[in-house]
Image (tube, rainbow, N blue to C red):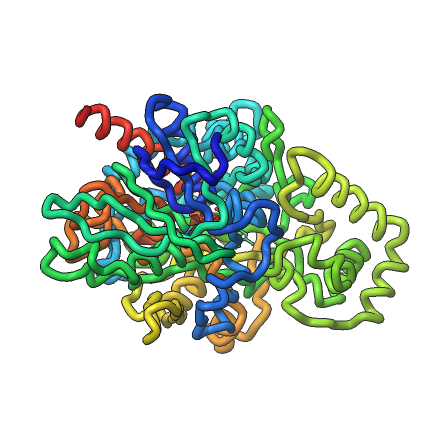
Length: 555
Ligand SMILES: Cc1cc2nc3c(=O)[nH]c(=O)nc-3n(C[C@H](O)[C@H](O)[C@H](O)COP(=O)(O)OP(=O)(O)OC[C@H]3O[C@@H](n4cnc5c(N)ncnc54)[C@H](O)[C@@H]3O)c2cc1C
């Protein structure tokens, strides 16, 4: 790999951004096409710690209650936001590709595309180091196929879908050596992609200017193909700023920057299982290669379609850390550690730390009492977790503690309706990115109904019941106040069959251009229940293959 300062600025492929999407596309393409040259433009400077930066400072978040601040949602630097991501690898579901009335026409992709993308899951899984891409407990030969809790049985609520965990792979450090080895890859670190030249009459874009983040020097990058993989916020901002790109269309795609989605996320109930607590699958299971996997509750496609509800995952979780009534010395110890300045920051990225402490300093005396009463376990358990979570190569992805009462908090992670008003737009200065983000009534009502269904199914199989944390009439408000996301961003450059419905075609090519692509979860029209990065990785592998095929066809 060449590192900056080269004079030749003509490439076959130019990739903007080196997060999981850009890194996978660049590695896959450069590896399979050694005669071609690839340049990666990365805003972040080498060796700089994640933190705030000039790009994030020019983003305005209109809803800090439900949306994390921009710099908690992304990182700049080699490897992008994989510097702090949690590594949870989840598959999109069939229902996410089915148009349902609740989506208000927002499902602009189809199940054919899902089938095609599945071909790229094995390669994606290798980049993410998350084992074989098996997401169903019954397909794992070595694991027991018992229900998630004793007696649980349901056809509507499923307990067999798995989430898998990456190392978690930090793409910058993990793939640096591989980039070094590829002598057809050039990395321009500390450069911001700025302006594209107008496409010619065939739609070919031939120039991109990039600005040195420190010296403001401008360079012109000429390339046969451009790929925007700058994360949802910045990919959207670049396209919004470069409207000339759409000059061959009747008008700029109306959906650009619109239909922004994240997830609704939070807890409104616990589950009390009635069977043997030792037979509850509450934590991580180790797949045969050591990859961690975990079960969750989901809902069948038929049920969601019939009831017109949003795709939602619900997983077993710990009680709220800050509330000392959980009486667990280990949880109290970990909560107090998260509150200690400097220590807390090193234990988890801000968005995750906030989800644990909820920003509250609560019941300190009661927490101390929990710790004393549970000694030595209150220190030994966190010590063991610390070792597994921070000192091993394959890290324990999270902390889920056994409940002798067979009672677990339930964490929901839910699809959001793609509404036009949720959007990213440019401010009057033509630079500032304004994020407008709200939860809608149907978003919230769907979560409440799905909890009711889970409760019904648990009771019907005599395996347990839900215990709500709020009065029924207060559930809606509680969700409205607790749900905070923005770390899984999608929708703003969505895939569609035509430019009047979306921004890119199914091959991720920007409508109106011949050689400009977007590789970001911003192309996903629906958000489903899934954390988006693994699925995005499969799109990245496919895109690299697509470009390879296109270029060999032309040559
Ligand atoms: C705390 C946290 C936990 C998360 N956990 C999970 C999880 O468990 N599972 C999951 O699926 N997802 C998770 N995510 C989301 C995940 O990190 C993102 O989906 C993923 O990183 C997106 O990859 P990307 O390559 O599209 O963008 P990014 O990783 O954001 O990378 C984009 C890159 O582009 C660069 N860039 C931006 N603008 C420019 C420009 N103008 N010029 C040049 N370079 C530019 C940036 O510096 C950055 O390096 C988490 C996110 C956060 C914040």
